[in-house]
Length: 528
Image (tube, rainbow, N blue to C red; front, side, top):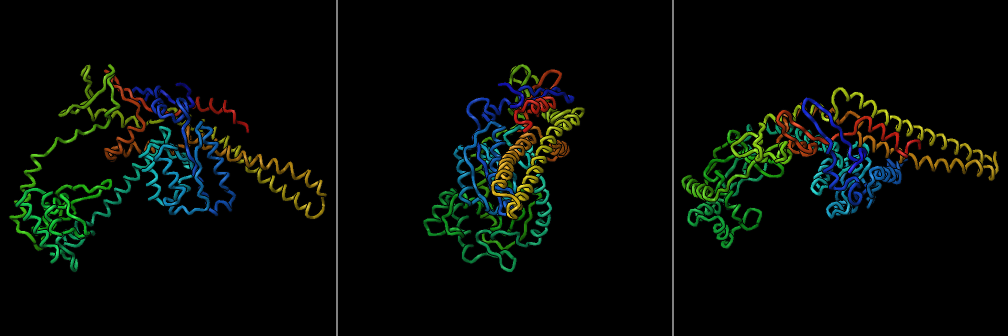
């Protein structure tokens, strides 16, 4: 596997030894570049509003631009999904959307090209749904306008950073919104949601429900007698009792009722929060208790919960071992993998017993983020050369637009001459046909040049937006959650080699500026 254009890599030093000679090799196994096996199969998403079409942005123009981009990447376009004139407010239920998602799930396509994120969907919730679905099936999103291609290491990093920062911002907002929750809980006010089974809200006060309270009391009595949650659920169902929603009792429902202290007169609030769709307990210091009318004696509640505690102690399984931040990517210079043994705080090689402290390794990686793509000395030079190449293409595109405008003006002028009988039909044809043919050539070249600009922007990320994001990532790193840090490490890290005197971090890099210029100079499409 060779070819710097397909798998760009640079070896640079940033205070620690960095070797990216193997960058891009792993993605080859998935065959995104066509180097091994068959070409990547992709789809094209065409959603052009009626307003866009009125401005001259035809569906055919967007499709050709995407087709040309796929050609630059040596991908095979397998499907085109047409949603012309469809509103972007809600596209998830559209038949073409469902067909596209079915193709993603079946593996018929492994990537989707679209002109911009707003063309995929304007609804933020649906954009996030698309993102999660694509990520779950290992498929890539390619937005030409935003220069995001998640099939590239840099694109995956950019997308991960966007998700991490967005999540961070959402959590910040959520914290501010939830600041009033403990106060409302202490005042005994409803915090939303239904009252616990056996109770109801009456004038914003929690009071026993005459129909449900006896059933709630029976749950405790049956459990004290039989000591089995499944048996209690079965006995309740056989007696004809049902939950508030009308379904049969389950052992998990019985367990929640037994554990809830509201039944003994102590209503608990502000004790859970939603994390990734699941309720998790908050620290006990944040829990708020208010006194309500009891529906079971406190002694009965205590005896039942003591039985539950004893059962859980007997059935408790060993906790799952925590996955360390750099698990799977840390290697020893002797060739062995390094792990963090239990009751240890160091990555250790089982072969030669080489070690490095967990916190020290994260600090080294954190410092590496300062110069993620290029060293500070090369950064300005790289951006200048990369932007120059793209600017030349943008100038060429503007020339094509100018020529298109002039041709249309000339065609209008010739047509007016013909309508005013100032030229004969034969003279009109002789003058108009060459202009028409040249206009068709220009209209065919414009989306091709646009696709080439898209390719260069995504491939080389010449705009410094992602570089600023990387710097921002360095500043925010200490505030990111473990999950976000782990995602970023998986996106950009090939391997980390621990040697006696140095730490070698293998990252996937962008091409050097010399490779960038060489690529442009040898591109057969240049000069069109």
